[in-house]
Image (cartoon, rainbow, N blue to C red; front, side):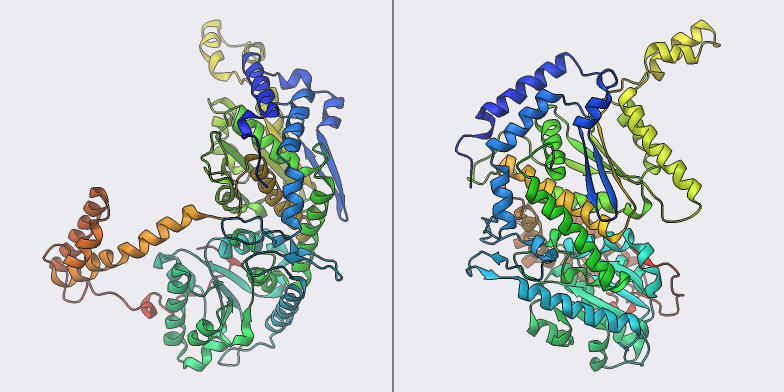
Length: 612
């Protein structure tokens, strides 16, 4: 459903433009307005089965009038209608003609019927989801119990997930987030995504082919980067295990729908785990793509993660008409306020929880790939800002890196601070120190430090020195932040947190009238990479072998479609390889076989989750 009136022409939008103009003329002093009544008005607490989940957004640059205006904007742009259509399985992904129904993957009602509309009609998706979950449980229990054996009759000690994008970021982030719950399973997790052979080599140095299980995550089994890494891993396995092709089926499984491709690779169709085109890659860790998570933490914990996400799904759907009561909508409206009316370009995600170290990177894809659009659902160029730049690091590390800019720089940077009320690991007094930093940073951003306070702190210094130092020690304050406090980082709370941010993205897309479920911007570069590959192969292989000559005619013809800079860089690469060939011993420039990328005598790693 598209908007009849252009977004920037809506009265609700214009009212916010006026409010923002007034705020810029007379900046809001958050300290002076901070009262218990304000905290009550601008805080939400959700009663989860594990304790209260708090979202305090009182330290944001909004007052009651602005908040009401933002709520009216959500109503005018029919956010609730879009949410219901999406979670109801309608074909909201219009450019690809399909539903976006990742929420069905975590539907916990055994009697639920959920239909996904699309080019093939509307069908109940729940039987297929339940079948795959049952398949995942059977498989993970066999691997974790030791019933699954490799070609040499040994149990698995390591799992290597080979995927890219959503097939990597989500599972890798989740395995790190839930590492506390994975230690007892005895499996070490590793993730390979980059087509750079260094990523493959450094992971394979850590594992023993006889006790390693590889997961190949590619829906079509044609993803270029994933298949390149998968073939290289298979070649390494065959060389270093001394086993024949038949052993591949005991060490490789697939998350795919391409049975023929999997069989040709050597994977048993019984060990293919299905996922569907109505699940976008960046929203896919809740199903088969989460197999690595389930192997690591066990299926019971994996399903607790689904329970937490489903809790947030139901909260979102039940409160979407009430902006002051719906957590994902609160975050979405705050983001729109800063992005569209106060000219903020970025948004910082700052987890005071080391387990969530990869959350900012995950949310970069979730948010920026979804809402990084400049064309609306009517096919028209937008005349307003859409997705924010997402970035961040865990506290307290960030305090000693980039917080200086947030506190005293010239950029407006809204921040989400996340922390568990309870720690998991001793010494627990360090968790108290962590929480004190969490509280102090949001308070310091809000309160700042006035000239009078600065001078009072330096009262024992000579006056000239006080005068010189004072301007440098003043903090303006009134820097916005939202505090999110969950009871403890359990699989349930983790699932709720991720689903909360997914729904924030959907709500913002509804306001901006864009499609958050496609990613055409990714496709252009992939096509060009395929076009340019023969040119690179010519530059590297031919030049290394001959140490002479220019780009071959076939490659030159391809390059004519590109710019002078691209052609010049390619010629530079060719010159480097030509020089290497001319100055090195015979054969030094030849391409190394994939099976030679690692030394099998390297010691195994002692860590649990590897991102190297």
